[in-house]
Every structure is written in structure tokens, then in C-alpha cells.
Amino acid sequence: PEECAVFHCRGCWTVLGDSLQLCGQEPPGLSVLICFKVTSDVTWEDSLLVGLEGALLGCAYYLLSCRSCGLAVGFILYSSASDLAYLRGLFCFFKESIMCYCLKNQSIIEASTVNFPAVTLKE
Image (tube, rainbow, N blue to C red; front, side, top):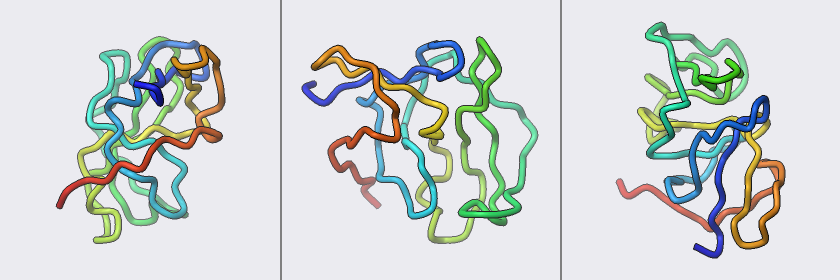
């Protein structure tokens, strides 16, 4: 509870999730928060997108958006190479699209500057 934070959309401050749902460490090349669950204010289309560059090159994914303002806030990986396979089906928030409200000190900070305790998925 001391490390708890609420994740807000950078565009409109809608609550999208919280740190109690964090379930993995970000992979190299991706600046994301990986969660099991999100709020109902996170939506995604049925159509798949394909990564054309960077860490998601060749990966198929669903784009996550904020229901309130439409900002792209992350993705759900559908298919990937084996190095990202553990992310399939999980909610990955782009750190640059998220603000964190930290409960302990009641402050709002950029998600990219927050270091949450290590959490790993069991295989």
C-alpha cells in the first residue's frame, strides 16, 4: 500500500487503472506499465494493428484508448516473437500517456519517473 498509485489519462485525468494490478517489468525498448486489469474507461477496437518499427516490429496488437477523450494509452499484445510472448493478453500502458497519483505523498507525477517494486509473472 505504501507504493500504491492510481493511473490517470494524461489527456483528461480519467482513472484507467492502479498499481495493485501491475504484473510485470517493462521489456527493453518499451516504456510501458503492464497490468492484469484496467477500468471500464479503457477501450479497444476489434481490429488488429501491426507494429512496423521499434520494439513492436512485426507484433499484432489492439490499441487501448481512453473512453473519455480518445487518447491512445497503450496496447494489448495479440501475437509477437518469443521475447515478448509473456505480454500477450495483458494491458500495457504507454508511460508517456499516463500520469500517476501516488497515495503515500498525495502527489501527481509522470509515469516515466516512477519506479514501482519489481513484479514478475510466474511462468
